[in-house]
Length: 208
Image (tube, rainbow, N blue to C red; front, side, top):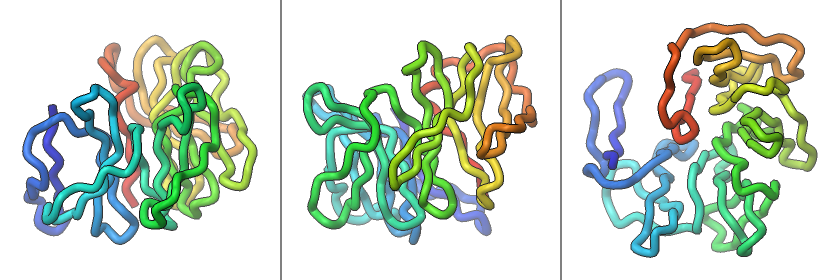
């Protein structure tokens, strides 16, 4: 279980928004006024919720899905299904009352990170038999960023768009790497150690 808190950098004191309960993958709206997150319902399925960042009011259930990520233009990306066997990354305007658009077709496409311009998304997928990073153009088209037979995941765009950070166990231990968006250069920046339990359900963020 997990609480959702917000910390103002100038104050450094966590503000408890939601008490400990099963909630995951919190993501702030571009104006920082709302939070989207995932939580399980009584039916055992995960749903996306939208709530006020100050904790007032009741959260609104948006759709069935998990791992939401709010983009700079106000669109919300998450992993979900629009039909029983049609699942993948969905991009939705959470305020128009309409269903979102399904952009990929693998239920294990997840952990979206938006580029600063909002025109591309990095995500991880295990469609190749191990986890890799893909770059998805919102106008159409997917490019594979990593090709190692080890696991690469939890992508996070640099605030200036110059690179994509991710975790990998490619050298027999976990570490954070940065790759250029064209995939031509990759460098290790942080050693994370030999073990990283439940890493697939975590999130890597790159602060401005």
